Amino acid sequence: MAAADGQPEAVGVTHSGFVALIGPTNAGKSTLVNRLVGAKVSIVSHKVQTTRAVVRGIAIHNNAQIVFMDTPGIFKPRRRLDRAMVTSAWGGAKDADFVMLLIDSERGLRGDAEAILEGLKEVPQPKLLVLNKIDRVQREDLLKLASAANEKIAFERTFMISAENGSGCEDVMDYLAATLPEGPWYYPEDQISDLPMRQLAAEITREKLFLRLHQELPYSSHVETEKWEERKDGSVRIEQVIYVERDSQKKIALGKGGETIKAISTASRKELSEILEQPVHLFLFVKVRENWGDDPERFREMGLDFSK
Image (cartoon, rainbow, N blue to C red; front, side):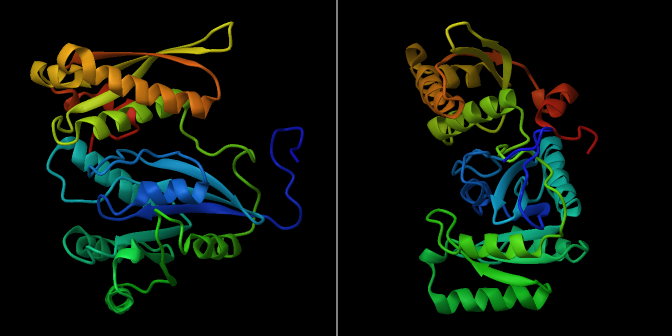
């Protein structure tokens, strides 16, 4: 039931808070946030560094509202965009009530995971360890991994889950709902993300771009929703621009006879129609904007700090 101001009328004592999900690239953070929220709020692909800024997914569990902050994967930055993404991730961690470190159980503590554990020592918030993809690893190895991580950081709890099939996720939700501080909910009961719909639509198209092109198109691409028109017949007309840095990348995005861009548009339009629950007319354009990765306006559009 909702009150007159649009806020839900939860019965009894309510809990609420922010949970930052951090970890190496491709550990499954976006998949887990979507699983815990119960709807798609963050794009997913097998390419690393898909998430570029903090995306908040909002879940209700028992009498608690849990706001999950899906942060960019933490890695050793090389470009300005990389640095801004890593800064955004650590900033999300420092703004949360809890920090959840997600580790890919198959990869373990190698590489970036080791560096993240070191960085977490400077974060004062209570920390949770979440080992993902447990269905792919022997239990004995999982216990060794959990022990090794807990020797480095004093985690409040360790969870073993599969974000893909949902195993163990209910335990995470039960713990957070009971442990987050008492307080009113931050968002209306039916809101699942704080991402504006125009931006979410752009993210959906960027996901389809990544999935379609795999390694063919580097990270020098960005999608913006330029026009959004609600039409009298109940449909919506959306115009988006895919920015790339070179003509050669534009040709890749378009494909022979426009085949690639048509496939991306079809996939994106289908998902957007399901999310919006209304017909969508989607028009995609590909434009070359050299060095957009050094353009302050593009960083603002993505919710990143250009100065980092």
